[in-house]
Amino acid sequence: MARYRDAKCRLCRREGQKLFLKGARCFTDKCAIERRNYPPGQHGLNRGKLTAFGVQLREKQKAKRIYGVLESQFRKYFQWAEAERGVTGENLLRLLELRLDNVVHRLGFAASRREGRQMVAHGHFQVSGRKVSIPSFLVKVGDTVQLRPTSKLQPRIDDNLNAGRGQVPQWLELEPNEKKGVVRSLPLRDDIQIPVAEQLIVELYSK
Image (cartoon, rainbow, N blue to C red; front, side):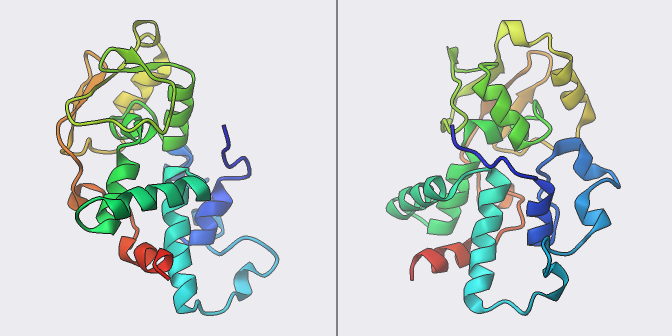
């Protein structure tokens, strides 16, 4: 399973804002953005002004890094979004939001999407009664995402739920006592609170 293995904090520094890739650490003064709010590398402080292409590229890179997908995966999502009815940029973000690792994070079971990806890959979750260990699995409206019986006792899950770092979006419903969530509807653009200008990504891929 391909994934980015290098330092996560340098990704936030490259984009110049918090992408919340490391869970609880991002909410402390240990966050790299709090310490060194400039791009990484030898010439980080001397980078020039971005061109129009550079601005579009940065938006695409930012979306990829927030959701933890690689270029080939991201391009595939864009092709699916382009083939669907509606606004391509919104369709793209909706597909990314419906990934199982993101849903686990949105429900509060994981402190970050990275942790959600690990939990899913280790087989801790089932969707509508069926064990799913593929982080990129796309949930559907009406699906129930819950911890497997043997995984409900993990203290890490309770810690994440009690931390309450983010509000569960309206398109999801959390039942904390049962440690499960239900996909009530498809996410709308207003429900997807990420700092990405999706239209710039569409313009980049449309060249």
